[in-house]
Length: 506
Image (tube, rainbow, N blue to C red; front, side, top):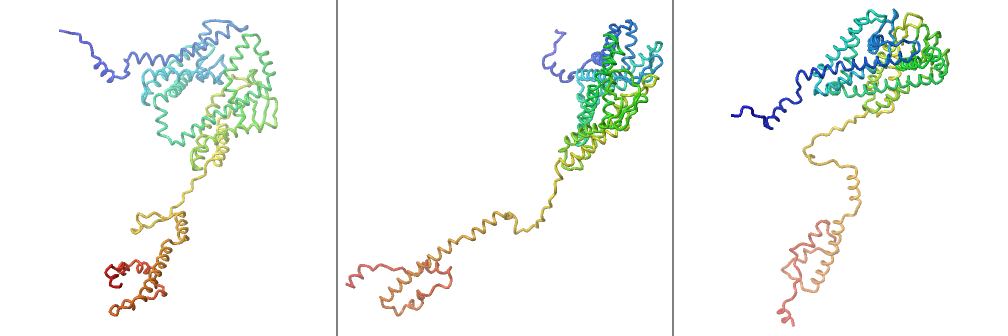
C-alpha cells in the first residue's frame, strides 16, 4: 500500500489557482519589516557618512565615532522636518533636500513591498502604510529619548508625530498607482477636475523653475561675494566641503524664497525684508547661499513678475481645449490655481523657521500672501488665455418643427439641387409634344390621300362615311385626340384589288 502519494500536475495547478501568489505570515512580516526599517537604516547610514566625512577632513573639528553616531540621529530627524535644539538655540530652518530624499526612499520601499505582496486594491494599501508610519514614529521618539542628555535635544512628541506623518504620506504616494488609489480617484472625480490637477502640478513646477532661474541669476551676479564668504567662514578644504554640503541641502529653501520674491510677496531674515516693492537691509548669515541678497533696491524688480504671469499663461494654454464651454475652462483653471496655492503654502511653511536666538531669526516666507499671489498669477493670465484661445461655445440651432402628415410619409424633402434640376427639366422642350406634332402631320397626309381616292371613285349611297369624315384642312380640336385618330385601329385600310376583280375590269 502506497502511503505517500505525490500530487499530480492537475492537482498542483488547482492549488495554484486557489491560492495565487499567497505568502505565509512569516514571509509577509519579513517583507513589511524590510520596507519599514529600510529607509530608516539607509537614511541613518547616509547621515553618518556625511558627518564622518566632514569631521574627518575639517581642520578645526575632532573626529569621534561615538560623537558622529550620536549626532546622526538628530540629523536624521532634521531630514523629517523635526525641529532640534543645539546648545539651547532652536533650529527650525531645516534642509528641504534631505526631506525630499527621505520621502523618495520611503515611497520606493513601499512600492517594492506592495509589488512583492501582490497588492492591487486600495484597501490593501493600509497593510503597507500603517506599519511604515508606526515604525518611523517609534524610531523618531526613540532617537529623541536617546539624545536627551547631550547638547542636542528634540521634543519627543514632535519626534513621534512628524516622522510618522511624513512616512505615511510618502508611502501612500509610492503605492497609490500600484494599489489602484489613482484609478479610484479618477473614477470619483470629474475628468475636468483631473485635468485641472495636472495643470496645477505643471504650474507649481513652472513657478519653482522660475524661482530657480531668478536664484541662479542672482548668484551669477554675486559670484564674487559668494567666493569671499567661502574664504571667510570656511577656511581649508574640509571646512569648504562642509559649507558646500550645507548650501546644497538648503538649496530648495533658497529657491522657495526666490519664488516668493518673484510672485511679489518676498521673504525676511530677521530684520531684513526683501520684496519687489520694498527693501529693508541689514546683516544676514554668512552662508554663501545668501550671497545673492542685494544691498539696495532696484526699480526693475517688479518686471520679474512677468515670469509667473507667463507660467499662468502656459497653464491656460495647456487647458485651452479641455472643454468647449469657456466657463468650464475657467473652472478648470481655478482648480489648477488652487493646487498651486496649496503647494506654495506647503513650501513656504517648510522653508522657513527659527534660526537660533540672535538677530537672524526667524527666517520667514508669508505663506498666506504667497499662496494668494500664486493663485492670482495662475488664474488671471491662465483664465484669459483659456477663454480667448479655446474653442467657442457650440451654438445649438433649433431644428424646424415637422408636422407628421400620413400622406407625405416615406417621401424625402426636396433639396435645392433637386429643385434646380426640376427647373432645368421644365425649361427643356417636351419630347412628347414633338412626337404629337409629327403624328399630326402624318395623320394629315393620310387624310389627303384618302380624300383623293374618294374623289376618283363613285360614292356609295348606302354608306354615309363621306359625310362623317372631316375635311383635311380643319385641324383637330384637341392635340391629344389626334394621335388616337391616326392610330385608330377601326379605320379601314386600303386593300389591294384581287385577281378576279382585275379580270372583270379588263
